[in-house]
Length: 447
Image (cartoon, rainbow, N blue to C red; front, side):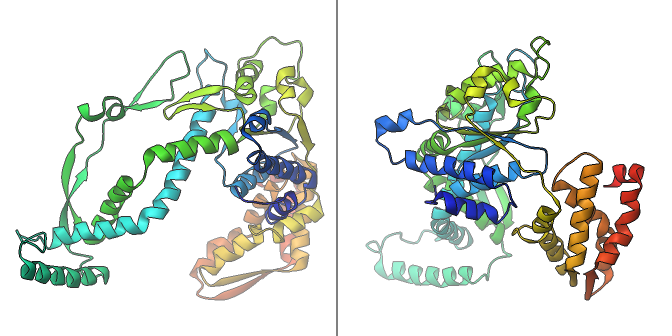
């Protein structure tokens, strides 16, 4: 986890997210507290639990982006899931424990990818040595200098020359025959009453050496063979047990789960009975958030210190409609600010991934330079605000539909132009979009 102060975390989030100061402050404190917890004594560390957060606001105000960028800053395992996809235990559908299993899969991939980078150079060198053996067999030459020093020395000089040629790319298109592992036994899905239905169990892992690994010959060019052999060498060099230990530690101590659409499993009608997709899911998800042991194919994973960030619009229901136990597990609640025209102007221009920067970069790949005047940007922001007020408020996502409609002809036609500069003016924006905005029926379908 990067050593970032809360102010530095907010500063990093400001590069991608406009406004939402309260939400940024809350998640920055939550992330910093995780860093502080790692520096406590073992006894005290176990007592400190994460302060889970509920972000309350309509779609398109930055809830998901805040959680995703936060996970990137922490270099932590992160998963975004939608609460409405889960059902109560005993019904058809995914059970809530699959959240932890998926998070563990992500962590394992993260750690293995990091380890692969550290050994990639060594693995490629070993792959090149194996390619030399395939391209130029020794044909019974002595392997050690003690057997025949002169022959061994001559063999080494020849091998060094051939290695230099191989590294220079002289043999890239030469065909070689390599011995590779064939596809293993298929994954066997296990169905049972204890939440194991999504645990993939590999028969090779269960029976170990009882089922020998199959090998097969494959003819390919040197460049492709190097990639295949390097992957095999990487697998040999990585300590997989250490990777699993590190992945489990990251999930348990720095994992972040983003529970989107939490309001969809909250019933605003207190007179209704239990609902499979509502109160039942809340009851099932409660133990995961409180802290429990979840069985995965990598072993048992504890969720006591996983940070949960929930988000929802809460148009129909309220956070107080959640079951009391679940409410208590989300002590921090932040109401997101509604975006206005000024915010849209900043969203279009300031962030590193701003829409105008994206479209400009896309068109530059074909030699077309897009330029947006200040008036055009203000007009786009104003139209987005008007459409959001007239119809469903979808926040910054409205800018995507407006920009796509505005630039449709340019994106379609300018591919045939070798080099050109196109200026987007206020008059062009108003002329292209004003009729659609004024026609309510047409606006509903297009914007």
